[in-house]
Length: 287
Image (cartoon, rainbow, N blue to C red; front, top):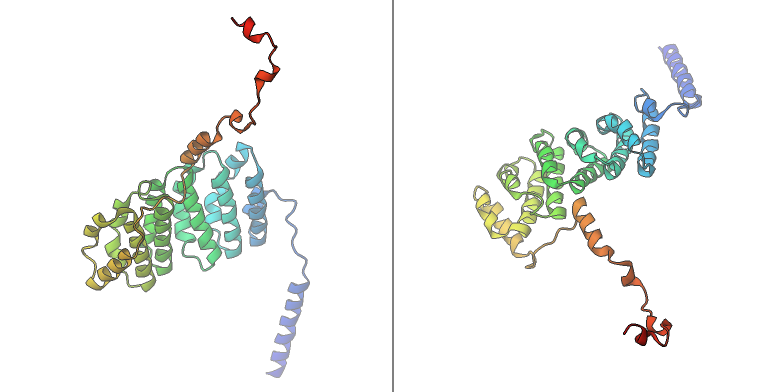
């Protein structure tokens, strides 16, 4: 028996030494596309880091077209480290691609399913940031439609983060951009969820909605338990009286604001007295 233990120890020691001394595989000769499809997560991680830099710097539409088919693959990456790096690449794509909104139907459901319930906080935050950016570059309502299915998930942590995303959509873009009606219909079920974190975020979402809608939304809360309703009413009473303003503009509004704010170049020039340069007989010449 002792001899078996000795042989086993020797075998695993040799194996461990081999792993520690084995040289790192070199992926530098491979293209980004090849590395994104590589069996090694380290190759995929390297590809994500390179792709993030490329999509941040490029001005070529062809670069975005080349890597668009990989977006969903980046979101559902099985390795947690490579997945978070992949989300950075997606963020750069959505921020800079000329037609990024056309990819939301593919990317957002993948983010909801595979990222919002992730263990890594960075992954959840980046996925949230990407979803909010999709709302910014076009309009929030279609984005909301792709997020809502996350509320049907079995994992409470995924449902919780989905509620947080919906709350952020309302808070950042306002009730004029994010239609409250479909959200109000979801509240009773969220308040009845078995997970306390889901119920807590449902409460935060309801308070945010009340900031924008006020008393008219109370009819949507009639099915809540009396204790829940009482807690909400206490929170409502502490809200500031002034009407909220969106913290974030959609891209079209940003462009309009730039057009208004640009002004005329002469508005920024120092005044010059041109009469000093006119000839002395100027008044006589123009009669």
